[in-house]
Length: 263
Image (cartoon, rainbow, N blue to C red; front, side, top):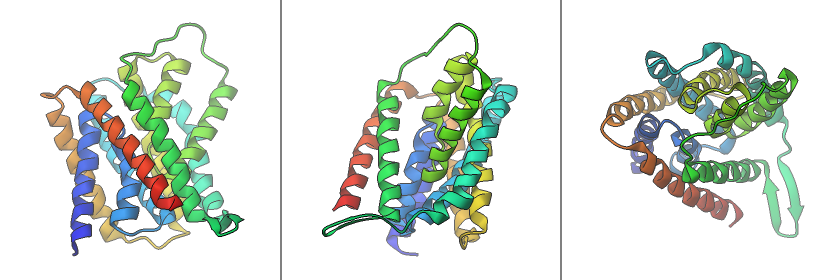
């Protein structure tokens, strides 16, 4: 095992630790670790990330459920269009994306570069969400019609399927604004959606790519260990400032990915 692989596995532990410590955001580092440290191409990396994110979110769901911070009914209602979109995206859309998106002079925008650039844009949005780090988003009034929720689920699910990240920074506001859940319960409920989306979405990849199960299960196990350790550490550490700091780190990483892909 070379040095980069060792660093990559340490990164897996770190991703889980961040998730356990601040309650979200860490999974967005999974794809960069898989691509830049471990050498996987973006299509395989986003597929692996779905399995890793789904596994760790399942552990997070159990932790939140024990604290009575999960609304399963709302989570299942919202997750149906989402996991449908994730599965279809991984099963049919990603494999059929053109290998070359754009060619202009000496510049060629390939499928792999396009996926990583889109991923970097989502990282930017995620970093802004963490940096702003609002204490609470509250709304009042009637719930929106379900067809709007269904459409939102399809859009967010498609994005999740393309980038292989959890999408909690998208799901949490949607749950607060649509279902009027308190912020803490929205975070816990979002983990139900992320778990279903990621694991069902991953099944769409099983028929399209060769999976190195030994590596994937090892990486996932380290991430799960990290989330457990982070959960214990969060009892003694204030996560609010850490979340903002991690947001700035994610912003730098997004800029780095854009630089790497465009250069």
